[in-house]
Amino acid sequence: MNNPFSGSGVALVTPFKEDKSIDFKAVRKLVQLQILGGTDFLVVQGTTGESPTLSQEEKLKLLETVIAENSGKLKIVYGIGGNNTTLVGETLKLLKIEGVDGILSVSPYYNKPTQKGIIEHFKYISSCSELPIILYNVPGRTGSNILAETTLTLAEIPNIVAIKEASGNMDQIMEIIRLRKPNFGVISGDDAITMPLIAAGADGVISVVANALPEKFSRMVHSALNGDLDSARKEHYDLLAITRMFFEEGNPGGVKVALAHRKIMNEFMRLPLIPVSDTLRKKIQKETELLLT
Image (cartoon, one colour):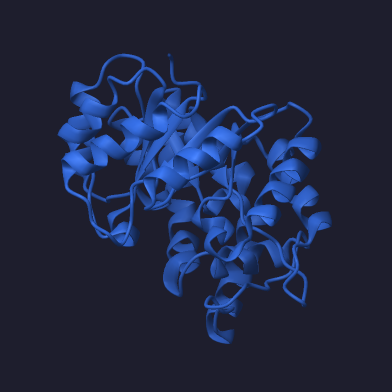
């Protein structure tokens, strides 16, 4: 199976109303911003979507809303992962796949499996779905790292088509790129190093920043993929300051400030996450305005 996911992917935030219910009107506005902004594929219910605080019913209603608003324009990836392998597999088996093009599945967190355990986990869940699966390596959240050797082993499974790499370890990521089979995708999970990773051979990104600034971020990604590194480098450095701001007090608080500034949604989040400080908010609003002019 080939990797169908490349270019500028966006890990969609989940907009909330003041009562912390999902703001579905804002969801639809966000999807339209991505379609018009040059995004290549949408990721529903990654960590940026505050997935740990949503019920299964809410997740599916959100997915249905994105599918309907998207109307087949962009590919859609749905996040299904966890540290209970059997439960992840059962959830995959129950998923109605119409309108979903792939699955993003995080490496098991908290229980810190060995590399062999990670392999067995993904072997099992890959047998529970016919959809293409993107592995997600984010040691800062999971407490364990998927080593390059493990990724390359998992790449032999036909429907494991790519990895979203958020280890921040350039040497490890370049080792995957160096030794991967031709159709296996390597996708950046760190906005700040997306351009250099694409220059090193990566295929794209699943971005946080592109929620609020899809036009500029997708230009950077597509310029880099087309070998126009001068243009890509300019966009990269234009975006670097706001990228740091977005993560300064945790994700997705920062990017929701920029989205509120663009009148797409409000900043509300569900506990334990809280909005950013007033000082950071003002900095993000000012930088967003500069980037939009």
